Length: 121
Image (cartoon, rainbow, N blue to C red):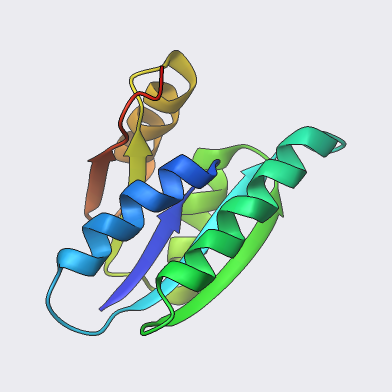
């Protein structure tokens, strides 16, 4: 199964990796982090999140990709690029994450799985 994962943080990546590790079968996984142009902090956080995916999903065929732009668009484009079977995103309950998950659900032409990300506060 080809899966596109959207992440913006180490915590989101960890929650999604937990979900993927519990599934049966081998997945081809592309992990995408989208950041606003020129946002160095977001770029650093995204790079750390992508690094976690490579380590945690070492048994699967994993590619990581950093894209600039709006997250929902970047995820839908990445899913189309690889003809993904599903898109997996995290949901923290914050306005930003909720908005991204909602937008992906509205725009995606394939199944979307929303994985809850535990609140760290």
